[in-house]
Length: 507
Image (cartoon, rainbow, N blue to C red; front, side, top):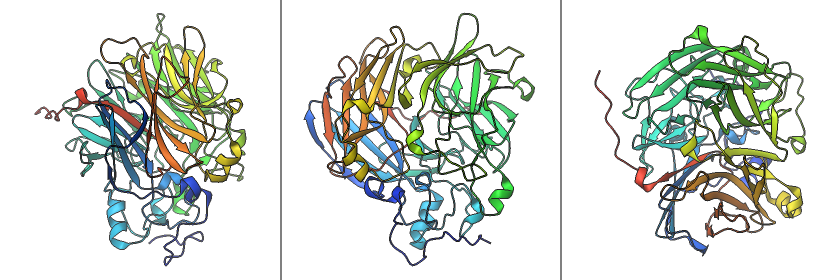
């Protein structure tokens, strides 16, 4: 039986709640279709040949929960196919169980974010498939970290169904940030709350290029906390835990899945990448903090681990406060890009003080994927620099709410410490960038940044393409005839890497 929710929207309402997360630029898009030959200002470099995939939480129907967080929307995938300096756009929802049942009912049936006890009906797979989309073994994987991924056709965006790798998926959950080993083609994965809601279990596993699951290891985390992203080096795997914790009794009572815990340390779990057991896991810790998305991790000459990530001293997901209802003012939340260097073999589990690499508020870091799991010398990220000339009056009047604001892209050169900046315009905010390397044996970081940009003056979306050799201006701006609300993650796939799926090896 579903729990009665005082905050439930009227079942007769066909209007989205008058809340910031459903208003202005964050008003749900709900578009499916395609538009070929988008308008382009400037010239898209003819060398670029591939597809940019991104996904946004985009509710198809008004939610049951009046103050539903924007993270709870249906996964709507956008593609930007670029070839011969032309750009073609396509968008389609992932046909999850939730999406199909709600479309048939013509009303929302999902309850609170990651709380099945508040649903109107029972779902076998409770997923929105709205957090990341990546290409692997001839298919797209639409990922939401509380469930298995959904598999889609990379061209048509047709949903094939749940991707369990032919029944091999060992965990009930699957990370939104699997890591592709460029040398082997392995997809390195994990799931947390891997045995179900409120469980401390973490399952690490690897999927071969042929789709064979191997290297499965089960761990128990010190608390039931959020592990959104993780890091992989040649010999180690790292699990940074955000101090947002889950309690199953709170869920059964109709509460929130996540609650900020200011007393929980910032943990980084570490296991050997190969041959690990539950006993080999170590949980290093630092003072309470919110770790952001991983830049990259690698090993130094002494066998130590180096890992870079944005870090802030307060709860970024302020809509999930602590037990006393305390949450930070979102205007005070700023993450600095930091570097931790530590010995994974040490018996001392206190992490050293991190080195600050970038002091400006930043997030959504990316690297040249060719150096993933190896030493990197360039990093690309979103940042907020109020001195650049943003017209905050226009932006704040039209922004809606819930998602972070970044007015520029940064490129950190580790060899010099310099940060190059791309500023898209006074009424613009950027989403997560992707990097496209120049064809051939180009040096690390030599290529283009591609980023979806919100234009709050026109209330429309633009795709900006910036040459990393010259960030003073965009080489091309692609104009969409529609507005795409804030997304979470996406990836670039070169046309040369789009191949038919490999068959799983027979056992």
